[in-house]
Image (cartoon, rainbow, N blue to C red; front, side, top):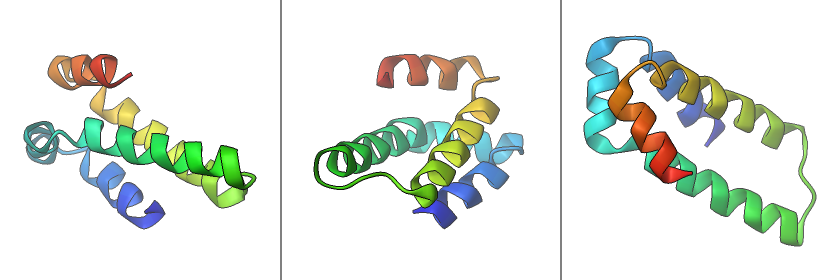
Length: 79
């Protein structure tokens, strides 16, 4: 999951990829996956360093995507 999110973050720099991510609703998918992962870890296990790295990469991905108004509205909708 960390590698995939890192790859999406690197792809998010280019407009063509950003537009494709918007059509695929990547923001909603990553948000849902992260929320389920962290809910499970908070309830059944403790968080470790790899989880913090994944969270930082996801925030960097969302930061890159936040410069597009449509993707920013998807982020607000996703929570």
